[in-house]
Figure 1 (cartoon, helix red, strand yellow):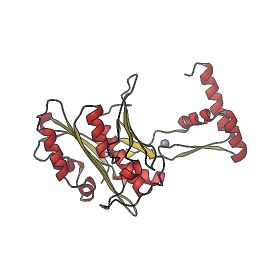
Figure 2: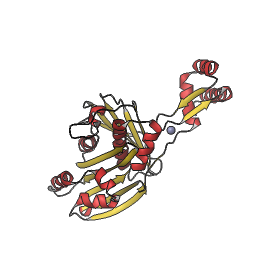
Figure 3: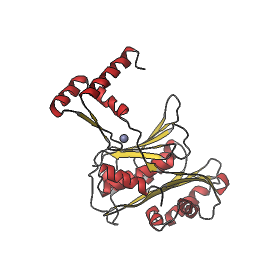
Figure 4: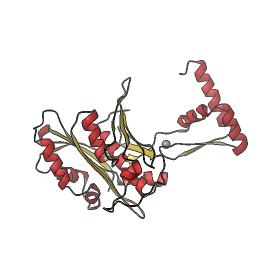
Length: 299
Ligand SMILES: [Zn+2]
């Protein structure tokens, strides 16, 4: 099944509901970064979170989720764009922990239970909107719900999940239900009860449920009206020109040293793992362009 993101209105406007299937994007992230199962699950849940937060973005707007926990995984970042492209990375992709007593991947152990959960919404205004909350559990879904309630004052129910099999990612996706202002006071409780009764997201995805069906299941007896559906995929916006900035930051002397020792300077994109090699001529061009930029005021 293709990766997809669906946004719907529930309960005649009292709920904004999101469902996403991100199996393909998560598998692509796993393949590119060589993540081991626990790291794959952590990154996949964060990619699903970013995809759902990115629903409704327009043009060049982006949403970035940063999970900065004290666990072995190190900082983890996922980003989504208006056209459904998601990308992300974990600092230590080889993080893999023994399963929890309930035989689940120990995402919270990998992320850490202390730290912060950050969201940056770049809506093309002068300053991006930024918010953060302390981590609740490091399981990502609960942390996103705590962020939405605490930082954006939107009571929410969130579920994200990744099923990793020996051959790769079998299922990944998420559900997010947000209670809108003016909703009946009983609604948050109803949604929480629904969420507790729901099968795990990964079970719905492996069972063949579509994103629409996942939403309908989550909303139960509430009415549902789909706003939009958009494909989701792993894609990066890096380019040789963008990563050349890393080269400039490195400095001409260091670049020259690497050229002497290695014959080229290799820069890789953390988001997607693509590698860009700069030979002597390219290095000279990059620094000439950087000098020009400075002379004209950095335009
Ligand atoms: Zn990239």
